Structures are given as structure tokens and as C-alpha cells.
Length: 329
Image 1 (cartoon, one colour):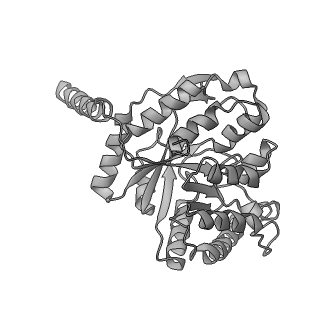
Image 2 (spheres, rainbow, N blue to C red):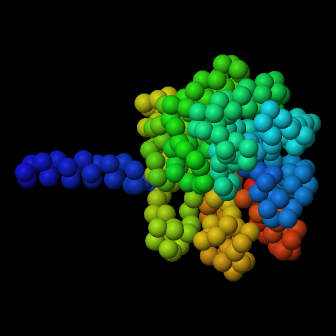
Image 3 (spheres, helix red, strand yellow):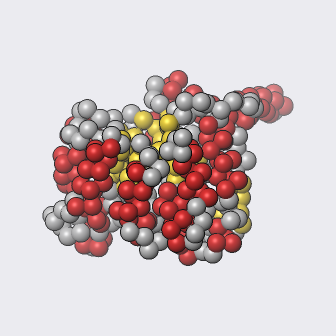
């Protein structure tokens, strides 16, 4: 019994040291990008296309991970509407900007699963058939764009967050297989929680693993704000394991650069926002991310920076982002 306990403690100590001990320096060659959702911009009362162009022209962002929400792509069964996404792709092409389309049913931002109203009435099997049809159309339309860097299929499919009718790992495998059969020139990324996962499942299905990176959040299970107790080493060593065993790169798919409160962001006060995001916290998160060793980070919060500047008269976050992307040089 004592020998077994000693062995357990020894292994536990080894894992702890591996994941938590170490102080890596900042990586100097990080590529910085942003996430973008037109629905999220509209929820702030913004003109989403103006916000998008401001990111490209004012901040001179060169990497954009943009959500192709299903309910916008296919508002009625078989009726595909591409005006908004054609605009985003066309404007990216004109500026030499690389985009990562996020496709599927779960494509980020609340409610996460952006299922059209008509599809909510379908059975799971019929929903899945409709999703595959939608993927065929979307990938077929944009696969030859010089701006497409790679695809992201679903958003954190293994993380139970959002209002989603089901989760199905076998179906995710089917989605990835379909996308890769339709477009053999671009890789597929699968994302997962940076804090709550070892990323093994994401590595099984994706050519690239995308990890979230959040620092200070509202933790509903505890009904309080929480700062995650992880160091950059925690992310760096997990990425090393994924590369070792799966030979897959890990990048930062969502770096917290906006508040996370007890309600949706546009339903909380500015004072509440400051509990999880200030200019100082913004800079600290950037420094933290640079020390994780990831080659690329997509910041989460670009629509909020624009809202703060345009609607609240506070351009501090916008200017911090400007210095990050180099447009202030």
C-alpha cells in the first residue's frame, strides 16, 4: 500500500513539475491575428462591415479568423446567402490578409451553435445531413481564394459550452473528412479549451490544434471571478507533448483580450467589464501569450475594442492593439 502511494505521489510530482515549473521567455516572432464575428459586432450596435474594415485598414491586421455562422449562410433550407462572407473574403484578398473561416454548426460567440430556425425543427440525423450539405457549398465557394489560410471545423467541439443540441465525435470526424476531400490544399484546425483539456481529441482530428487562452474570467460554477493559476509553461509543455506524439502544431486560437463577466458582454456595465479587462490586463495577457511558445495567437475581443472606441470614447484598447499589429510604427 505504501509503495503504491509513493509511486502515485512520485508520478503526480513529476507531472506537476513538467506542467508548472519553468519560466520561459517571450517569443519574439509571434504572429498576431484577431477573431471576428459579424453577429457579435451587430450585438454591440455596430456596423459590422465598418468594424471589419477598420481592423484591416486602421489596425492593419493580417490574420483574421472569421465565423461563417450557419444561420447567416443558410437562412432558409437550400437558400444560401453569401453577400456578407463574399465581402469579408474579397476585402481580405484585396489587402493580402489571410483568413481562417470557422465553419459548421458551432462557430463561436453566443449561443455558440448558430443553428438556423428551420433546422432546429429537424431530427439530429437530418440536421447533420444539412450541415454536410452546407459545408460542401461553403468550402466549394471559397477553397480557391488566395486569402484562405486553412479551415477551422466547428469551435471547441469537445468543450461543453453554449446552447447546442448535441455533440457527436463521430460526426466531427465525418465533417473533417468531407472538408479535406473537398479541399486538399488547405489544412483543418480543431480547437479545444486551453485550460480544461490536454488537446488529445483535437489532435486526433485536426492537422492543427487551436487552444484558447483565458486569464481572468467569471466562473459560474463558483459564482465568482477567477484568475487561472496556470503559467505559460502549462501551455508550452502541453503543446510539446502534442507535437511529440501527434506531430501536430498548436497555435493560440482565442487569446482573451476582452472582459468575461456573469452576463453577455453587451449586457454588463463598464465597471463590471473592468473586473476582468483593463489596459494593464490586456498587456499582461499579450506578454503571457508570447511566453507560451506558440507561433501564432488570434486575439478574442476585436469587436469590443472597436465598440469601446466608437461608442464609449475609450480608444486605449484600440491603440494597444495598433502597437501590437505594428500599424503604429
